[in-house]
Image 1 (tube, rainbow, N blue to C red):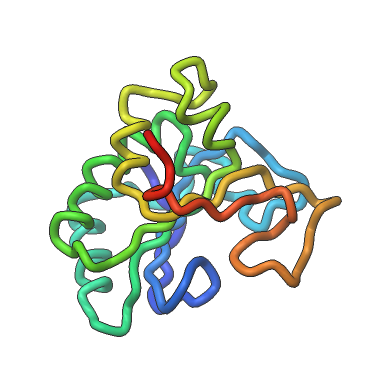
Image 2 (cartoon, rainbow, N blue to C red):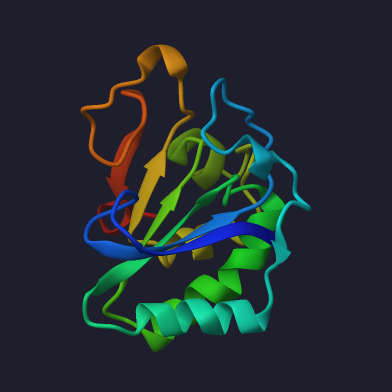
Length: 165
């Protein structure tokens, strides 16, 4: 797995001050995507244990609320497999930090359902370790700058603890 960027002290992608990891690779190719360079799965840098350690260290401050993973597309099958051990590590080492994930895919039809187009052997376990999922494609025609933590009105902020997985 590759990543495009790590933003420390990010306030735009979830509640509170966060560390945000922008993974590489996306097949959605939304019109007017804010990060089209991340469509390429090989863009940026290799996601290594040293990078994990850097992110864990950045989260280990009382003013940091948690981790946000976006992209690119975290829920592409390749990225799910790469993210699962890392997300579990964050949950284990920093249980008080929340984890947000942004995806262009839809929870019920694309991810949870065994017939979903992005459902893999890692999906359910990954979702069980995520606190908040922001799902749905960014749709330019539904863009709304008044929405918190979303770019278009079709996107949902889902507290995964409220969902039976």
